[in-house]
Length: 293
Image (tube, rainbow, N blue to C red; front, side, top):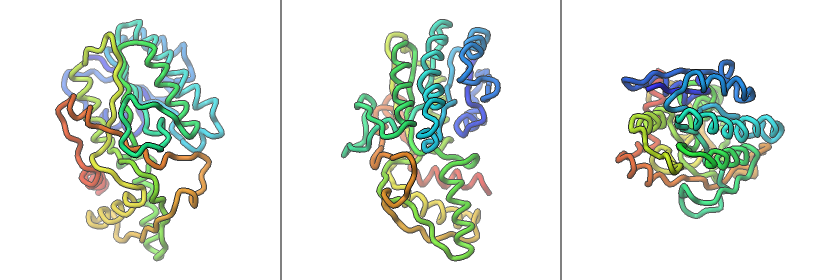
């Protein structure tokens, strides 16, 4: 089966490339090869390759910078999914599109269902939500929402925290992390397994699209996640020392983009559909930190 993977240098795409199942021909294209700002080039590549699936890992993901660069974020996250879906449908292919918990406003008191109304609080979330709507105009698509994605490589919360723990812990300084943003982290290893599960089953969704939710099991805050990163990294001897983490409110941490305070996704539907149970986030975190040894 021929699969086209966009954004091949990103976190998730890297995990996908390291876990390719048998009988999969994976064509990996990075931003230079497949630039979502260049529609005609993307169209030509899709028509030439004619993949069974396109896994779209390419996106504008800088949440704060999107407040300034809305036009670019809109072209990549909103306009590009529209033409991608159109050209994929023309070759009778299917799209697996990665989306985000930031399409929700955080006002819910229970985990978000896949069909709950979106109401993003920032430009990044807005462009992703509008991109989802564009995709749903066509057929043969799966939108896979996830939250707090991280891996052992690239720039993400875990690699940032490891650097802070190392630097601050050495001089006995504290790290301040928000405690009132609640969701669940997602290891790219965990998410990539689900992506390949979807591809292998090659779901017949010719008349209806699907929205799926996925993250590591459990629930946490950025504050508790930061503490766990330091403790586990020290236990695994990735860090010789780690810093004390202090809780602060989101209102005390000044950033351009407002984040939802509660964006936990309900993954029960996905677990039942694929007969799998998501590993707890601490288990996935330990595995990821182990990769750094």
